[in-house]
Amino acid sequence: MPISPVPTFKPAQPPIPIGSTGEVLTVQSNGSLAFEAGGGGGGIGTELAYAPADGSIDPGTGIAGFGAGVGILLITLSGATTFAGLPAGTGRQQLLLCILPTSTAGSTLTIPSGAATAGDPFLTSQGSDPGIQLQIGDTIQCVYSPTEASWLVIV
Image (cartoon, rainbow, N blue to C red; front, side, top):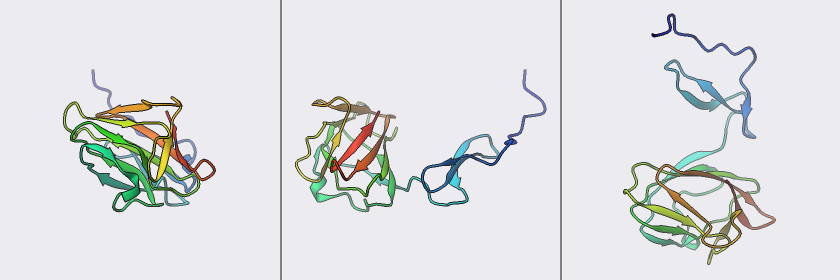
């Protein structure tokens, strides 16, 4: 039985800041959730779409458009791929790696721990290879540590 009237979202207090630059999670008029700039503006960073070729990704060649302002890397895979590392980030830069559902069925992204041949490696809680394997729809969060010169994976 439908609820009538439809409940509305009325926070008892101002929205809670998310991230170091004040982005907030809000409820849209259609009921969906969205991040929007709060009083401080900014947020986790911009989105960057990336569709690597199958095989090993060489972080030494870089990813066009990747830099300190990128906070979400939207990855479309077309097969089995190994992601050895990323170019260095800025201190405590946060990054979400998202494997999009538009990837080819059966595609995987393997993130070995500390195995970068160029650029800065990922350090995972697994400690050694095979590290982490992501499938379609998976998302992980990383933060850059200048002390470790690595992307730390938060699982």
